[in-house]
Length: 224
Image (tube, rainbow, N blue to C red; front, side, top):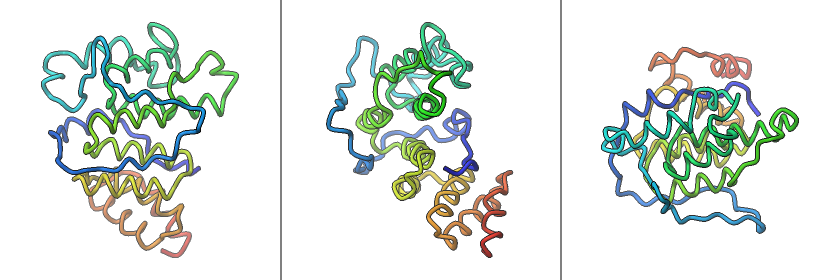
């Protein structure tokens, strides 16, 4: 897996791009669930679902109250949960707010950490698969471009580069175009050896004043 993917702080970006529902049908491009796995796509709960991308939910405090208790900075740093384990608090957050972008990214990172560092995270157990969390998010707001963007980062993190490229492309089609996306998309294209396209993304990111240049260095080493 490339170590150069920018694992971004999503909340400042979300404030710039709080969109209503886009009336564009979107296919969910996940890998198939294992036959033994079951994903409950019923989103109704006692206190949800709440839409992260609905400004009214933010104004009413319905998002912030969950974040303060069940999505703390310590959780985002993979240090500890707040009311229980990281995975328990995370599951509560994504049950109440299925499309919370930072929580979805945390699910991807926590799942990877459990696999990479089993001793350190021996008390953590994912309550749903990461694939399932994303399926539920797409079921709720299928045309939200940030979900496709975060899904692309999740796929790249797990070396599923072709599907990551598809997800980045879908995010762009739905209207998301910024320096971070261009840079991360370029890293995925580099892994796919699509160097000409990666160079275009690198140039786009640079034109938008993106601060990192590892992608440009990698391309230069390949003669691009």
